Image (cartoon, rainbow, N blue to C red; front, side, top):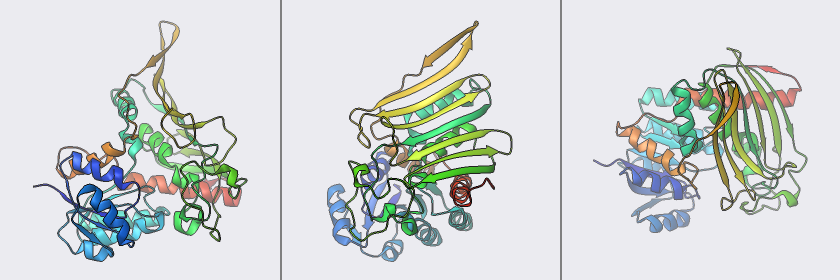
Length: 358
């Protein structure tokens, strides 16, 4: 019998969640949004018969699972409510506003004995899975250090909306563009963090010249109280280290989305370069290994299929496949807790002006 899924939130990511779920045979039975007109538009697009303006009404229905596509502030309360209603949950990133919320979500999932997964879609990219295959087979050895970048030159997603309001978003590009931090940790085996040093910058957060080409509509009297860019350094208990750099607005040549790492047997890189911030039409993907052979430095290009969705469809499909017992989950609540602890610590270090022990 097909898994029945209800969508909470009629935002743009529904265009990836819904086809991804359907590709694995799931049935989309309802869409809920406080703006029921928006829910009806998405429902009409995908042939979904039922819409709700209240999440509680959706959770009373016979759906097996829900997909949460809302502003960050609502991820934890909605996920916990759904888990308590005995529904499996697939939630957009970030998992929550902070590690404490994420821990509460994990506890709710454990108590309900239900699946809780997140849309860390960059793990599902063909390049990432190809690289992970080399790592699992021992070709890289132990990864000692890594660098995670998601940097933009003009990528602020609107001014005064929920993205730039810390109460609603939890922060700026550190929490919004957390994908490469997660991907680096995924490659590294998700080690236990020990120390974090971070610095944030808000230089351009109110400068309209740095708005992204796909930015949401501005809110004239809205709040802009998050960072525009951040740099950080994480040391793990086993001695591994991670450098991170995330920005919406920073003086770069172009947008870069990448993880580079240095292992005891090989180094590697998974990268996407954008010709213009936020647009995929001129993007370049790289997947490479760096080794020493017969006294020479050798660079290996790993050829993978192109995926303009950056793994979004595959991540959603993995959720359904996991529920059906066909696949292992691409991510776990324990990993999400570590990720949010690191993000919390980067923000705390930037505020305190000193390293923070986790």
